[in-house]
Length: 214
Ligand SMILES: C[S@@+](CC[C@H](N)C(=O)[O-])C[C@H]1O[C@@H](n2cnc3c(N)ncnc32)[C@H](O)[C@@H]1O
Ligand SMILES: Nc1nc2[nH]cc(C(=O)O)c2c(=O)[nH]1
Ligand code: SF4
Ligand SMILES: [Mg+2]
Image 1 (cartoon, protein in one colour):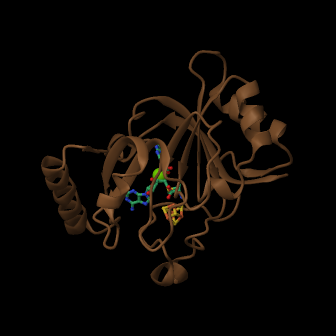
Image 2 (image 1 turned 180 degrees about the vertical axis):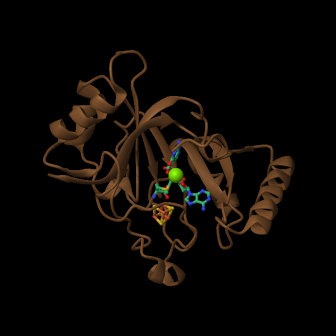
């Protein structure tokens, strides 16, 4: 199995319960809910994506020939030091490509593995930290994990049903409307108001955007 990767970089996890933690991000190319092309956004299942996951041309990206080569590149991004090695597999949709060989190879070089997935494909429990972010209009197959991170507001998403799923943490992340500042302000206000009235849920901010990190 080869792996198509848009980019790989060292940063801090910006979102969710692990926010603030040093992490290598591996962003897989491709997604099953949007082609990634602006012309297709309006007809996509997922229309609010903030990410470029098309191609393999980003910093640290490329096609990795096997799991060992992928793990070696992740370790190189981390650099020296064996403590608290942490990699976040994201995309695009990482579960289109992540397999047992990749998980084993990352564990073999000492990494704790997190994943950011839309939940439409089953995620192996050998991944150490599973974050699922359901998308309205898609079927969430993966209904257990470490954190459920719902982008908000998202019309058509049934948050009440999600509370019966098996997640240790429930997070609400304001939708980034990109250039639309008024919408950003409104989305943040709606998310704060929801969390104020639904204490099972906690606010997740995209802190890397605030901090100017990748
Ligand atoms: C780019 S996605 C990649 C992983 C996977 N495809 C998914 O959707 O979970 C990474 C995270 O960013 C979130 N996200 C994407 N676009 C967003 C936006 N406009 N505002 C807030 N969060 C967003 C996703 O919901 C997901 O939790
Ligand atoms: N710093 C940082 N944290 C993140 N957490 C989730 C991200 C993602 O795009 O999956 C992301 C990202 O792109 N950058
Ligand atoms: S599922 Fe994830 S990667 Fe795919 S378009 Fe939506 S937010 Fe972007
Ligand atoms: Mg991102």
